[in-house]
Image (cartoon, rainbow, N blue to C red; front, side, top):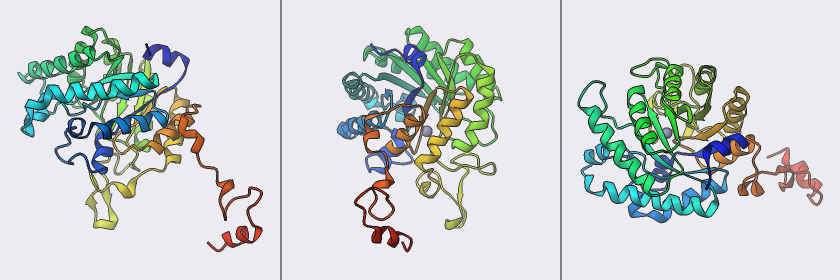
Length: 340
Ligand SMILES: [Zn+2]
């Protein structure tokens, strides 16, 4: 069976995320609600996306249960589909993972009801317990606990995952002010998650490559375990450090999140450069979150020295009809290229 620690000993591990945004763009999931009903309505779409991400270099197939927890389904009036949704998501992901020899990851995430020291803590723990139990039954190799802005909530998830005997990847979402809601510094949260038994700790979502990288350096220095980095593929800046903060000058300064982020999308090259910079810091669990498409994942995988099946089709502009240099390209067309 694939094993996360063994894979990380051999080299960097790539994990594609971003299923919510990609299914939304393809027209199978509603922005706003952001509930992964697509796993029940169109499992073929989710299976195909898993396959595309593996083809592009993902070593992990993450079951699409992000926001598929009791609290979120209750908000949209669909608590009754909780168990079938989770079981189906795990079954679809397991099928692809087992066929491709990749890691099958269960997934739990921010519940958006957690308040420290309140009765919500018990409710949140129960939600993690049911989701982790379904993932364990489905044979998950690991659980990704992600997008937490509370350390306390992440530690609850981690405790449940460790009780199930599974390796945990715990990642935090760092919003505009650069802190988490309880502990403050993300590196302190990562250190505590490591001490509580996480196999990998780090950051995911919210921040683009440019504004995640400086935080990763601090996380890397604070922990001994492997570090995860899964930015969103958007051109965030010092002034607008998160995808929620981005404002589009072409639309009168309107907020771009979540469905008008297109003009801020990073190129594949920018994701490759990010991956190389993160690797240079010692970050070895790499991926892309909301907004990720297969070409971004391939760029990350190639920066990590991998040659996924999709690399067969990686660009080779020497073969281009005008811009190329390959034998057989007419010199008159190469000259014409200067006028394009
Ligand atoms: Zn995300």
